[in-house]
Length: 494
Image 1 (cartoon, one colour):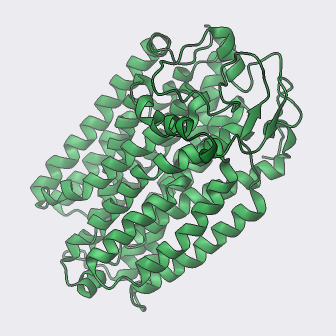
Image 2 (cartoon, rainbow, N blue to C red; image 1 turned 180 degrees about the vertical axis):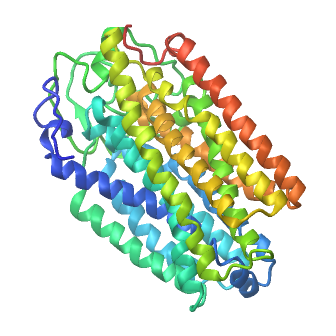
């Protein structure tokens, strides 16, 4: 766990080489906690639909819509945080975002109406969204490529299991306390997040000092190339220089802010719009669209479960409803092994076999997982239709979260590695499309309220998750390299 992977091709003061293995591990834990907390905050209301509906004078079925509003904030927020992380640095973003999240939590706790609470959830999503896109860039800053997938999977698992763990605490709290206490609990966790970032996470933005006409146009090795009007074009020698571990001639540099936004407003604007341009790359947008769809199905499972278990024939009380979500958390944790560790081993195998490392090789690790998405959705669908024992629903949900966790580690790392110099832009597209799907799913579920509708819906979800997944992975494995090269994305010669 604490083996320190260094890269002799990089300068000694580069974060990959200068940070100890223990410090890297603690940084990764903090990043994972941050990703966990934002999603934990989203899901903390899962077992509180009824009391919150009564408090706000709305139907309990309206409360899940605020989950969508929070995810809408996740979609929009990176448009602010990502440009800042590339200019003023990662650490200021973490500190500012963590600090601003505190008053947002207070706002949610003290909301007197449904409209006020919905607005608070949206703003909280915007503020906390830094935790969804900037941490993967920090992972790329401090870890060598050989372990990047497994490290990303640790972060991804934290994000995936948060919606499964939050309802347990929600049930324990709402069983004896008013719903406001949910967010006072979140406030304490948010204060811990700010303290962890302040104490543990240093600046990791690497600024290369080079007078040559290099790839890093604005002296930021990991996140430059933000020209809005130009197509990125690189020759293979330059791309090998961009990849932190591929350059044979390391160039001197420093860690810290690249420049302040007010010093170069035009340049900052180009960086601001660069995620929109990133969406034109097929290797970025298609995996992100597909993952967003799969993520939405997982959200739907967690929304339907409490509403179903509280009614006959199950008649669960508040605490058992919350505890039932642990099944999804167990599935998510087990999925880390397949998504991260197996993914890295698959890539290493192909690198030894072919002599080169390509992002598409990682997708082979997802193929054995895809059929189980259909199985999981089919189990959930049949349980709802036939009112089978509750344990069957939890088995189906846990299996789907296992698949989701594996897919998160594989697909998010694929997007990261497909355009490593613009890692935060790629993550912005990934999180935007994921969050838009998550925003839409509560409203989609409204049209599937009957048991027959749920049955058809989940069967269709499973078929799409499996079928589209095979088409996507197969197509990218077959032609992904040519597509990336044809669109001017970074490629390393085969």
